[in-house]
Image (cartoon, rainbow, N blue to C red):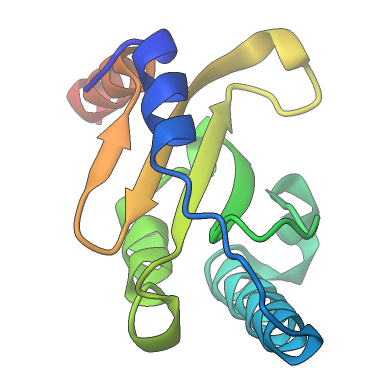
Length: 140
């Protein structure tokens, strides 16, 4: 659990930027990255159905930093969903990570709760998100 400022610094410092010696290497990375987007969408559909999947935003921007981005609302930020995302971080995707940004209401930018970085071997969570999750558990 870290402050938002520490989270941002760690997230930046730990970025694994791919460097490509050839066009073929870049194309291979891009295909792998694109397929991960497809796998994430499959997890989203399995958990939330096709109607609710519009409430989640899976970033499709391409940048060779071994990171995929997911924006979700607080009600969709569930252990089963996170576990299924985590299970994607094996084999070809072991060096990837997910940044999951949680909002009370994704349509309102002011409702940002916090972020979590999910790696194959650990997670980093902003303290505000951690507090919100603890409160959610107590209310359950």
